[in-house]
Image (cartoon, rainbow, N blue to C red; front, top):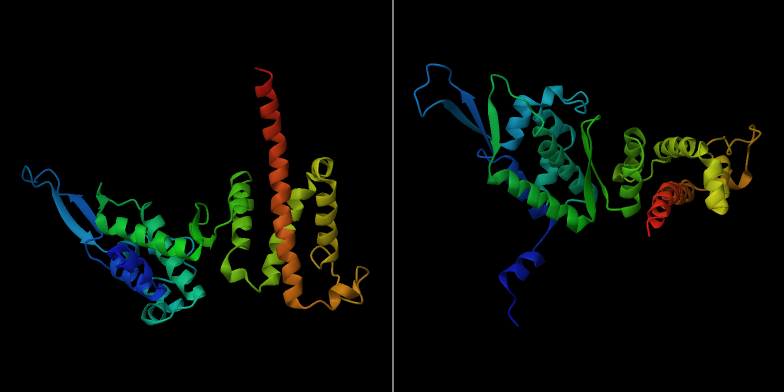
Length: 292
């Protein structure tokens, strides 16, 4: 049976072609239209000077140097070199990590350029190119089962694995904690048990204040969470023989095994936060029931 052209397109999808198409789009010079008022001497019907920019050029000119998360990079070109973007674009078979790196770069350009404020009452407008960038980017992330999460204070877009529990918890905690919760799921933290440990400590501190509440609704979950916090080299040094909290089993545990337990604890903490959120929801439902 002959395949439709749309089926053929879906089957031809590759990360390499997806990246190359995004690269072409973010450098399309017709991406953003900027209109600058000419002033009181403008001829009627010709009141603006119009200029077009690619998304990357626009971001470079009007946002990059004030971007909180630029690190020490001074331009888009500098960041591209730092992230090895050219090698990723030219690769015939980019890795998962490289694909995410490129998409995260583009995602930040897309999200943050919208917050730019131009001088002289100038205005800028999207063209169909920007819509195509967003559509293509979302398509790649769907293939990878990833999603974009924006943190306004940090001026960062992170790309993380789609996880309903993470999204639900991030929506019901303060922004600082939400950032930590989402960041734990970021691909760059895979294998980095030191950073994962720091995040677990922050989550543990948050749950400590609600420990009695948690115990009242799920005592086993509460017991297991704090057992792991206290015995898996998170709150205490359980790997040094000189420390009073030394645990031989933990000391002999491989880094990979310890990370597996950290990831288990992370999931348990998400569950705990959801169960605590449900207390307030139950109260609202009980109030609703009184009306029937």
